[in-house]
Amino acid sequence: MDKTIGFIDVGTNSVHMLVVRFYEGSLGTSVYSDKESVRIGQSLYSRGVIDEETIDKARIVISKFAEVAKGFGAEQVVAMATAAAREASNRADLVQAVKGCGVDLRIIPGMEEARLIRLGVLGPDAPVRTLCIDVGGGSTEIALAERRDDLYLDSLSLGAIRLAYGSGIDQKGKVTFRQYDVLRRMVDTASYRSVGKIRELGFEKVVGSSGTIVALAEICAARRGDGDPSYLTYSELESLMRDMCATDVEGRLKFPKMSANRADIIVGGGAVVEELMYLLGIEVMEVSRNGLREGMRTDFLLEHGHPDFDVRGSSVRTLAARCGCDRKHSDAVMRYALSIYDALVKAGVMGTGPHWRELLGYAAELHDVGEFISYEKHNVHSYTIIRNSYLAGFDDDELQAMALMARFHHNSIPGPSSKYFLDFDGNETAAIRRCALILKIADILDRGRDSSVDRIEIAIFDGTVSLRLIASKDISMQLWKLKSIKDEFSNVYGRKLRIEHLQRTSS
Image (cartoon, rainbow, N blue to C red; front, side, top):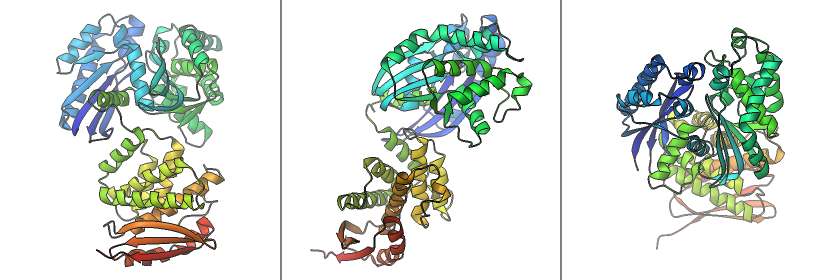
């Protein structure tokens, strides 16, 4: 299925657009995304209806987004609206206004929103029992998933704009402790049933999504000093919200990473996140930038004949395709890398498990994506692209590990105390260095870009690793290059390396 589709999420706070180009066997690649703060929920929660001015703004934004999507070749534009549209008595006016610009806007139930967000954040298959919390402008979606099963879904009448403009508490000025406590009690009331059910079912991992949670994570990361917005802790959020309440909108804009369109709703949104973390005993929450739009994309694939696909493998293939990688070369390098890995494991030289084998295979597929920017220093560019790719299905540490493998496939591999390995323990660092060297060897073996090595064998003699290459073509260049990494092999593996070559004759 090679086609381009536009996805529009009409939320209570913002309208988001994602244009995806689908390739056969992949989740597709995002070719354009944008968002605009329309706030259809502000007039709804303060005055009871979506006012005409807001409806007209929504119409203009959605119309323009649809036009942009079609400019990228989109054959179809899928548009969905959530909490504010669900609750507005004049929602038909919004749907009709959008229909006039050629877009069929579907207003989805809260449970469907929760299901789609789960697909966007976790993909179809959650490896462990995972709790997803998405705090939007008008509602908070809860999803508890394990493998392909949705164990629990709910949509709570809680959101950043709802609490900012529908709670009766003016949050543009300072918010007292008593007022903030009222907001938290509202969260208690709206969530008690879901909290009880989630406690009963239990969870191993928590992932938060939505603009509110991403914004809170970015501010906490800036205050923390490490600049890492991939997680959020309860203790730092509690401290942040105390400081947010102690100042007005103008004062909040002085917080690092605070945006002007969120300063008036951050207290309401923060109250929802903080109280749910407290009620569920969550100390650390991972943060995802994916959400409803990505769920719409995955659901589109599921509905169009792709019920079974590998999210991790798909996201890797999509990135490689987008960067124009030489698929024949990357396939050869991956095949050689995994063959060497398996042989080293069998010989007792490699003690890491299947997880590292999988990451090595993906790193091999992506090791040359940096050539999209420039061949010169392409390994460095590969690191940057992989590290900042937000590949679906991978956590932050996995992306960093794969990025490092790709970086060092064309460079000397630094020692275990290098700054590059500060985020990893000793065993992880050793695994990354060993996999990086395997990737370097595999890349050398396909130096001629002709898959000339037919088979790879490894044996151990007196502590020396003997790498035997069986080829029917001339591999002189590969052999010369391999000799240059013998010292590096000894440094990484603590063993000497011997290269053997067996020339196959054509029968």
